[in-house]
Length: 272
Ligand code: A3P
Image (cartoon, rainbow, N blue to C red; front, side):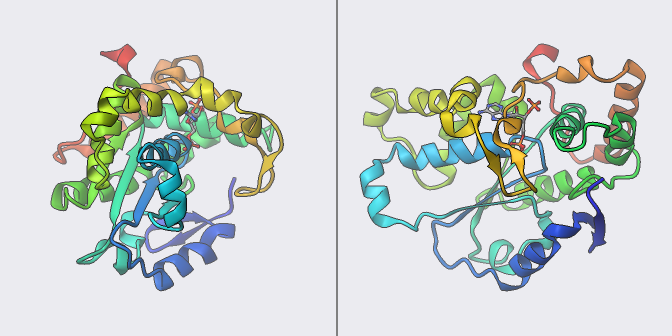
């Protein structure tokens, strides 16, 4: 459904392939404060981008504006093995990764793409994510495991988050992200409630309600209505879209792929 092309083991949407290859070959981040934000599609990209920006923002936005374009926040869906050497090598930049329960991801992707293709089949989408791994930037399990392993091997360089973690306690993870990015909240900022302010600024309701997000389209993928990026914003919505058999099947595939890695399928607050 997205004209995927298999490139170095991953299914990349054809229209993004030139950009991915250019990033891989030519990107040379040489600023120590560069941060690369990575996600599997529909796993919390928009939220992570907002929170990471808010971390820096609370540092004093006038000072930050003076210093633009650093610190740079770069956002991509590129799988770990395809990242430029300048990111993954010695002295490369910091990477923050976010993933999500694949059951919610597949529902989110289907609902998203259906805004452009109303007849898109959920069963096909499910097979693409759960069975053959051909979803955009998939296989999802390889995408997630690439960053998971990197976060274990290079914890000072790769921070691994889940959408469900953020739902559970956004403040705690915003603090961790700020520390990781080298911009910890100061005691004065803590006392002034900057963490809570950042979380509130980036909340689903706040972002969904912003005028800029309610109208118009985004050019990053065809002409997707901007409001399509803000649908439900919860964990566990899959129960309303897939049968228990499908859910069990997807869980089984991922459990099998994640076995022995120390990573388990993220569970939302609702699932304990
Ligand atoms: P749902 O479709 O399940 O609602 P991405 O940003 O990677 O495309 O991920 C999209 C998912 O993140 C969508 O999930 C969307 O509603 C949710 N989302 C977007 N902004 C959010 C926010 N500020 N807080 C929580 N979830 C958000």
